[in-house]
Image 1 (cartoon, one colour):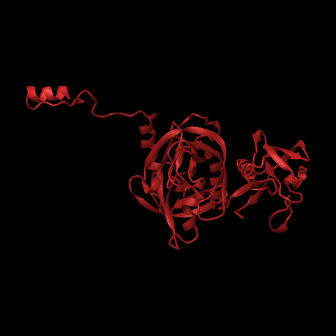
Image 2 (cartoon, one colour; image 1 turned 120 degrees about the horizontal axis):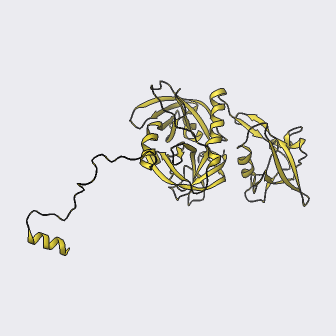
Image 3 (cartoon, one colour; image 1 turned 90 degrees about the vertical axis):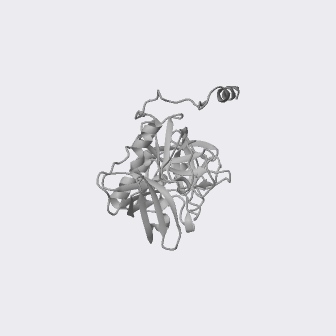
Length: 347
């Protein structure tokens, strides 16, 4: 204040502001900076508007998967308009294109759209390797939180292999994932958008948030720094299946487990749905010797604390893969090698 006061009294027309005359006229941002990554990725990210035939609708995010015009997003973003309704994808330059559902997987919460008249020169986002991601790695999320298109936020990978069961808030059906956790700000509308690493490669699909209300999903309140993304390795496998056949394929062990949380493991139920056997006769679990009442405590080297955790781990694999299950029966711990079976479509 003293300097400004003296300046005003001592001379006329002077200013206390400092000119940045020595700054370069064109500030160049290297490709590895957040600004550089965002500038390159934004043209390949779209804001999805889903308007159902019954009047329901919402806004989400997706990104260009290939040059043919396929868009990768969450199932819960497009579910309301999948059967009867209208879907559109708006690019960062404001151009809007009609889209249709190629296939969707409710259990994985993955959907593939196709632009009806895709523009020439589409640039797919490069896909990274979610298996090689480490806790502490930088992350960049792009999406349309609360409808604010082309929003970029940053953070780190907070945890890996986080068991998450999430819903869209409008049905009792859940999706299960062994998720990447990030503290990058993710809000409703970010769903389906890419989670990028520091090089700009997609490592996950932003899908769910934890809110102070205690629920998981995109219908909750705003970000508290607990966001969850489907690992891109899994999402890619699902996307390729949907593009090829239009239907998802799920690996299964052929056993019904309790969905209660924190039971010390995944307990095989006494019976299945509608009184069917909880262990499918001649199925993978039955062939491995598993029985109703067994409590599965490990999937390979991953500790299993509940049914949803087990499902999330199973779904990171492919049908035909061999896995080792550790289980408890009558106070004794045993292991069994199981060859995963498969189920086609959402039941």
